[in-house]
Image (tube, rainbow, N blue to C red):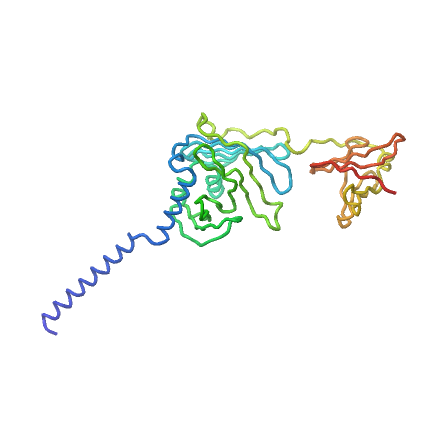
Length: 348
């Protein structure tokens, strides 16, 4: 090989290496199709949620109820303050309470027994739920995002993004293809968006799965959302003491009394459902216990315990049973009270 050919070969090799390096650098800095789409999706979400008005929010206070499965509703309150502070307060059926809070640096959980740090997964979920400026902060909470595909959230078509937090926690975010609004974050589904001033806010949030596990799904329904109230930063600091028990919103605290066997025996019998004649309630006595069964309970029975000679209850269930007597003192009906009252006639 001549000296000239060697020189040409060396220069060609240098040019090739330069080209490859330039191409790699260009590839790293050029936006991918996914990143362009994600930027557009987030921009649409911000615009749909209120655009510039989001940045102007100082505080947000919400009041509403929480319902699990088919049980009754219990009260809840949330308050958030920019940038990124929030607190959630929940009362449960028996009067016990729980609070969750974030002061911008650390997150905590407070209940009737302890005050403890919040785990990162729970904190991230609550940030998505409670941060009033969440559309503006999504990319801060999830610096790494990738489009997964399409899905249906209820009857809405949505684009799903797999989002990863700085500490590696992943969740899925689904955005409405038509409106741009956030429809799902993990197992939280956001529904019933309404105008609150210049913002769009979800008034109903479903938490957890349904289908065969309807008893596990919870529904959060807000009845009031207000902005820019005065809120002291002390509201978000980790509390020094536990929460007290308060008045039970669903269940009455009951006290069982002793009644004699003749009173229990007078209640024994069969009682016909007033709307479904094929359904019968059967009351039996087992020593000094009164047991209640129903034709569609497949032989299962529960104990009903006396509060008086005519009033009974089931422990841990918000149901009351009142035995109605005629003028002669004979039991003629059984009134069953839960969310409504059924009056079942005694049959021979």
